[in-house]
Image 1 (spheres, rainbow, N blue to C red):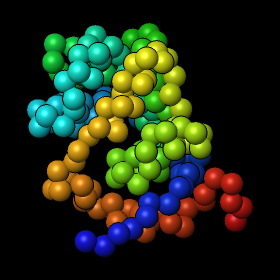
Image 2 (image 1 turned 90 degrees about the vertical axis):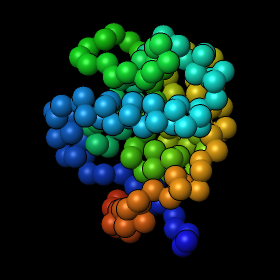
Image 3 (image 1 turned 120 degrees about the vertical axis):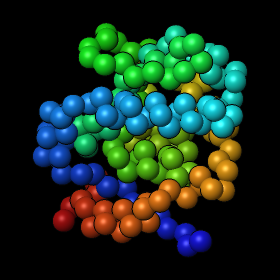
Image 4 (image 1 turned 135 degrees about the vertical axis):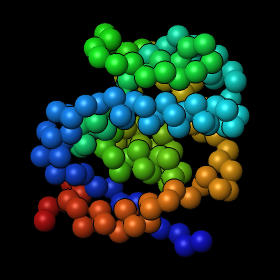
Length: 165
């Protein structure tokens, strides 16, 4: 298995403008499907899930304009459709930061302290989620994201924050 690095990149502004006008429910459905699968596979610690019960979340991808709102209730992650008030916890980052996080290239602390990941809301809940992300032991079959190497090569030429063309 070849090792590759996901570069830090920022999609052009027009992508976020278009993305924000598109329906957001597909993002929420995809995210909760993944989270529910991880919970069923026992990849998410039970004590962390218990602390998340009844809490609402927003995951925003700044440079795509995409958002996913969801709640953890009765043992399931469920999407929230429409305006639902302020979430208990909000994560905001560019697509590259989320890809680096999911692929384990970067950890949540590094992304947070480098100002690539913003966490807003309930501080204690934020620590629970951060510790849960750190504790996940991905099985070998999940550790490689299909297509990520191609995506990494594709975005290598995109503008990077702090770099002028």
